[in-house]
Amino acid sequence: MPELGLDDTWPLILLGLRIAIAAALYLFLLNAFRALRAELRNRPSAGAAGDAGPRFWLEVVRCEGEDALVGRVYPLDSVTLIGRDPTSTIVLPDARVSSHHARLVRRDGGWWIEDLGATNGTFVDERRVGGPEPLNGAREVRFGPVVARLRREVRA
Image (cartoon, rainbow, N blue to C red):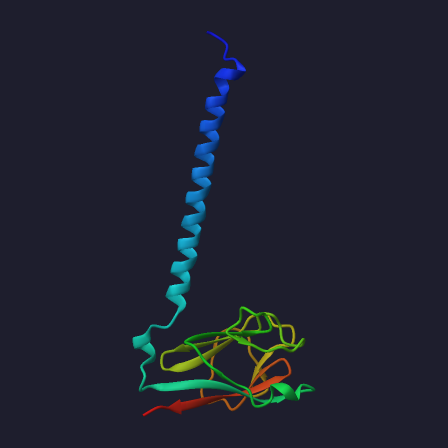
């Protein structure tokens, strides 16, 4: 069996590198499309919201030691993430609010809330929330020190 010299192996090495780069590019594109598809699945469709249907808002009514947040009103999506992290749907810029504090979900005609492991807890009418729970006409929701109310607006 003849030995391959260095001049004979370079084309094989370059071919291997080209295949590896092409495979890495395809894996990158596959992951990008998967992430895009997941993002689009989580968005409410235009028909689901309906222009004539009710819109829901979260209004901050109290915040211990942070008056600047009081009075802020945030529109709710069908899935709303609440926290201090800039990627949250509703960003509450208070150090006592966890980065990923809670999730509000519109399901079966009502709103459900779930604590996402927040250090200072999520409370519904001063009762600590664990897993997903329906709001069922709750008066106040508290994310750490931030107290808010769910508001409904019916558009004609």
